[in-house]
Image (cartoon, rainbow, N blue to C red; front, top):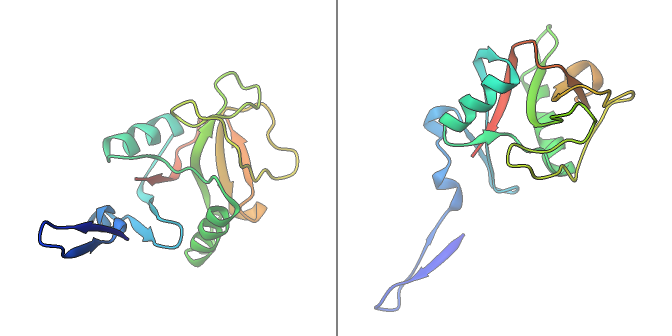
Length: 149
């Protein structure tokens, strides 16, 4: 929480997560100070998913720590059905050289690759059948995806 002191000496607090638009399907995790959304209503290719997230006021999700990886893994497992879940997340390799960056050019410092990945494809996905380890793909298939604000 952030505190603000008024002229008369009163201190007021606001919860940072109050900026998380839960009315649009976002979820706020207070422990990680993280506001994210799983977009399932329409599947998109990663380039289109990036545009969707940007127009929604955010970006593709940055899973940049083991804590965030575990949280998203638990979240996706809680939603599992009989079908495989494959989700696009933030990060891409423009030159298909396995050097991955986020949309703003920041280099990924945390990764959670499955065996035999990355393998020279452009975009990152989390996949149920690999215990939500990361795999990379060409971006030709429309899938559900995660945004963050």
